[in-house]
Structures are given as structure tokens and as C-alpha cells.
Length: 143
Ligand SMILES: [Zn+2]
Image (cartoon, rainbow, N blue to C red; front, side, top):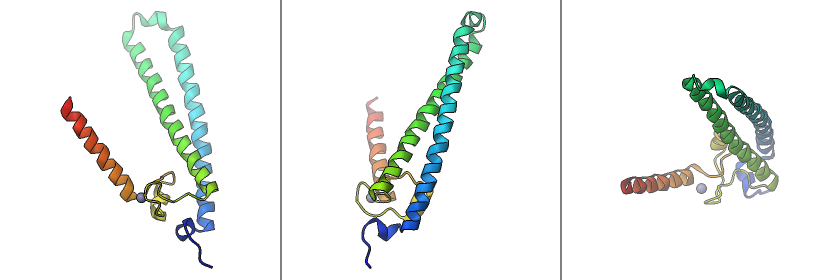
């Protein structure tokens, strides 16, 4: 039997394996995110409660604020990653997992092993990166 599309690249076992891997990452990232959000909230509460004492210790207040923003930044990065993992799992369900969204060619399995959430082959990704860098350069000369 001749199998077309994604099956040329990934067989059923590969897809099962990626599904397990992505589900596992999804769960652990979600737990980590919740933990960070809790930590960020507790940090904020403490900062509020001790605000009066910070009048004499501006350096401490600054470092607490840095902690808070760091936690929030990590939470934001994680939630983006979690969204990517969720998207990848949906692509497995739809049968579009492992297909480049730009050129519609199968993404090499080695690349998927390295970055299971990827939606583009390396050529398309590099091309987009190159364009972004050119845009950034143009933006840079204007400033
Ligand atoms: Zn491509």
C-alpha cells in the first residue's frame, strides 16, 4: 500500500511517540507554570505587606521587583511554549503534524526529534529568520 503525505515521513509509531512526548512536556510545563504563578503572586503579596519597610531599603525593593518580573517573564515564556505544545498535539490529531506550514513539505524527523513543536522545515525557518534580521537591520539604521 502506498501511503502519501505525513506518512511518508512519520509512521504511526512515530506519531504515537511524538504524541506521548508532547503530552508529557505539556503536563510538566503546565505544572511548572502554575508553580511560578503562585511564586510570583506570593512575592507580590510580600512586597505589598512590607512596602513601608522598603522606604529605608530601596535596594531590597528593587531586587524583589526584579524577582517578580523574572517570574512573570518565565511564566509568559512557558505559556507560549504550552500553547505551542497544545498546537502540536492538535496537529497530530488533524494529521498535519510534521508538515511545514510554509512549503507543505514533510519536516525531517530528526528536526522534529530536536524541536517537536516546530511548524516549519529548516529552510523555511532560516528564510524567515533572514527576513527578520533584514527588517531589524533596516529598523536599526532608522534609529
Ligand atoms: Zn518549508
